[in-house]
Image (tube, rainbow, N blue to C red; front, top):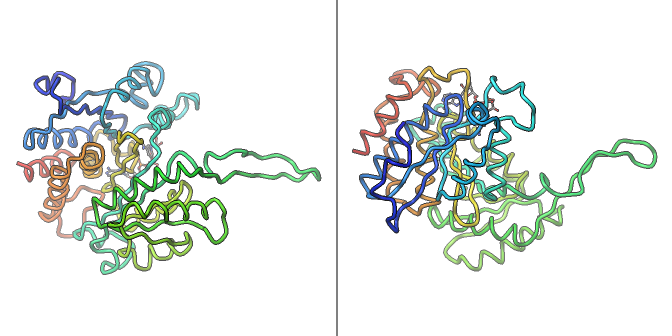
Length: 373
Ligand code: NAD
């Protein structure tokens, strides 16, 4: 991969320069990131985007090189970058080491250091892959949902929390479900702004019939909705949302919800699409900086074999252009390119079906590249 900082020297110093930090990570990470970087380099040239690439270490590869999963140098690179593209981290090689310096700690640390409060997870089903879904093709064909999940608050972070004993000696576990108005507002803005770039609809999911914290959530979302008259806002209880996602998922455009409900609903929605190798994600900070990565892990079982599907990472790169860099046209072009290679019948092993041609990681990446040229 040619991602050192010397590549785009001509762009350095330009007022439109955007610094992209590339973190290949572990397992299949370097293989899939290589393909995504080629795609980014191609659209960079084609659309004169002024992207400048720099590579860094995160996860197991960082442990091997420096002894820690998130070295200070990577933190400095991440802070200086406009956006970050990550492969995946972790693998059996590092499973036995001290918990506090495992590869996954690096991922949590970069998310918290950059205050990535908003997690965007699209569940998009390419019509060519409708048969891969567990739902009937007519229910999911053309599915295009974006789940916006609050990532740094809610019941996963609220205090007090713990397990203790009651006066009668019985064990008791408890967590605190808490959101401040400003936490709700900032993820709400992200959802409304995202809807403007898509289908213009936001469904806010809560449990306002039972939980006071989500009564506030609903009030704040309703207030915020007045600032976005062009976006259609609706509200739904989380139990109904879970049901609607499998009954009629195409009714949704953007779903915005808190950390715990989002955790559950985004996994449910991703399974509607059939393959984990196709799903990108973004985690965004208030300043628009984002960390973009496929939803899957480092797949050690297929690492180094040229079998991994690079499309989730390529689609993550497209999200990066759209959400952090406001470059919709090249993002659309990449996404259309992915659709075109599926139309050509090319499939990696994870999505192959009868009558399709199985290809490896590099061939799939090259096929997307040829649609861009
Ligand atoms: P995984 O997502 O890596 O793999 C699950 C299954 O999906 C495997 O059979 C794998 O071969 C397949 N798969 C995943 N991505 C694929 C792709 N692009 N193309 C084709 N097949 C693909 O999950 P896991 O096996 O539970 O975890 C493996 C390692 O990844 C662990 O160390 C875990 O901690 C780590 N992990 C990292 C992240 C991350 O970096 N964000 C997320 C999840 C897991």
